[in-house]
Image 1 (cartoon, rainbow, N blue to C red):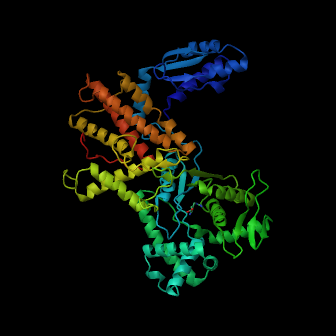
Image 2 (cartoon, helix red, strand yellow; image 1 turned 90 degrees about the vertical axis):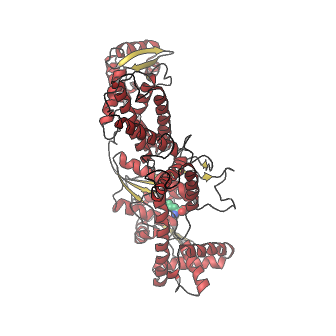
Image 3 (spheres, rainbow, N blue to C red; image 1 turned 180 degrees about the vertical axis):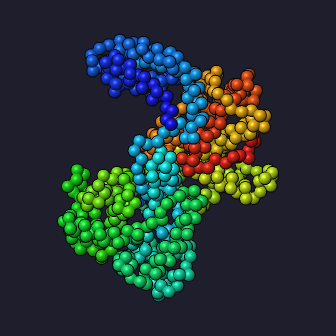
Length: 580
Ligand code: ARG
């Protein structure tokens, strides 16, 4: 059920426009910029007047006169050069809220044409500690996954691990240098593997021969060398465990745990398709696809490197084919930072040339970096990259300071306090990320992000917990929800805000921009606060008012919980703070 008030007004307006022989295209309202004057406004008269060379005020006056007769308008006026101002009847808003409270989707519609979306986020490389740079792709991707499902699409998310590139050869080469062979590989844990990778990085930076060695081993690994494959399999399994643990802690879910290596067979197919179609060529020993016929010249896609190894671009092109053929994707969305912009432009264009994804929408969502107070990518105090586990620990430590100790509150032992700490810490991290528009980077605020006040995740969780406590008290007093009656201005403002939910969710979905939901949740929590200060529930002037306000409060709780869920955040029943 889509309860958007705008839709209802637009329908009536369209009929009026038709009867006045005006183009219905302009029969649209938007939430008013001047809430003191009106709830909604229609600016169509201005555009119509321009086309018809008429006075916009005459057109506006004709529309306003007819609209004033409709049963849900309290008042209709026009001002300025022809803005039509619409104020709705309280009963109409109240009835819409009653319907919203009955709807299990709280008045949110679904997409008109549900389809299958593959989401590619996360994407860590194996044998590397996950760090703060890995945060955004997972956090944003998870939110979009939940949103896609909520609006009715079928979704498959894939972590797409980096497990097939030169770093693999680099580690194996490093272990061979250290041990003389690969016999001990299977005894190495993730910390040891990561150390080898770090050493390999240093060596390869300085030494061309080491780089050459790593490339050769990578090519042989990809080609099926059994010894390398066996050792690599162990690196991969160990990394998987660590990566899975990190994502579990972050509450980021994947349907598929595939990696670049899973595309290997399809890479061969792609090379063949390119050859058969005559779109590849050999250039200095490498097999490439040139892209320069396109409007924006780009470097060629290197499918097969001169040493025979498959490149990163080829694995992505092959993965597209698998997602289209096997997963039946009609949309594929990638989430990475801006360094991979060119990569995806090349990959999408090559896929088009190859004809492997006809009519499939492919989109690369680019996000900004997580920065420190100096505006540069976030580092630890000693200048190193902050790993993800440390970041989560920092957040938990902050949260612990605001919570009672285990055993201090009845029913809250070690386990319960830990769970709550985790729920709030993850909310703090995720909300701080998602409240920013995706494309802009943001400064990781170490002081305020886990506070229970301000535009933070814990603040929204706290608003939910506070309403839970109101609902418990009301229940204890035998108070139940009833028909909504709007008397105070604060009730009206709150009701109108609640009724925006459909728009908020749909805009977040089309723009792939969770900050819209974050903003809405924050504003709604604030508006609820003003409402609750002005309108007592337990001591309402009349029993019907108490029941009406209780219904509004519960609806706010449900909507905030839903918004948090769409951001990938849990809403605990209580927050163990004063007032609960
Ligand atoms: N593994 C890549 C990296 O660390 C990110 C993967 C993004 N997804 C993709 N399909 N290429 O840079």
